[in-house]
Image 1 (cartoon, rainbow, N blue to C red):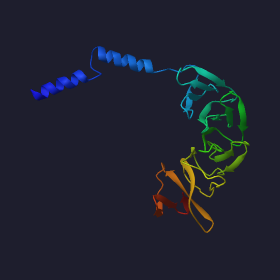
Image 2: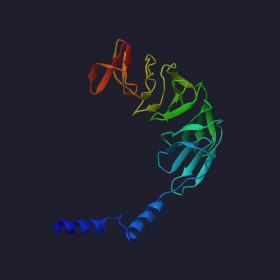
Image 3: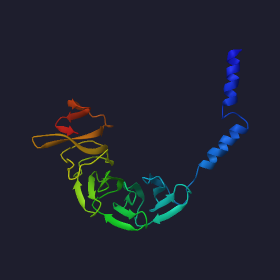
Length: 242
């Protein structure tokens, strides 16, 4: 009898049960869901501004669109790419938007005016990942040309390239980057995701050991050389992964 009573009480409190409460919940959820219509083809990438008020979207229709998150209204349409826009990313201060495209280019946009600030050329194939450093001074890009490139946001000049030694690249800073600290390009690997923190752990005989995270989907047999403070130094034959 006690179990039956408790079951009845729980059922009465269930917001998804049949009746007015269920309909009210469904109506509330429907009211909160906002569809952003405007793109004429597949949307490949979306990114919120740091303050959460604006959403950027990149599409196969070659355009980037900015949306007011509160109202769901489109506030700007950014045209310039000649092929699909695969990646969009706001700068930490929210004033600049970076975009990567199948036209092999990276573009920087002024969020306030919607105007293109710079076009970064260097990749020889699709650019499908762009990401700002936490201080906003550097942009990392990953491309189907198998390289990571670092760019000076202020000048638009390329700072460094990984020399096409990675099979597939997604570039992301985490959690901080030390200015003027070079990204090592001595690694020959099957890295598919390289999370770059560039926080110097220690330096020995001219070799900088940097903190980072390694993803190994290929299942390569890696041997642990040593471990210090949660950081693994791995080896595959003569290949050093940091």
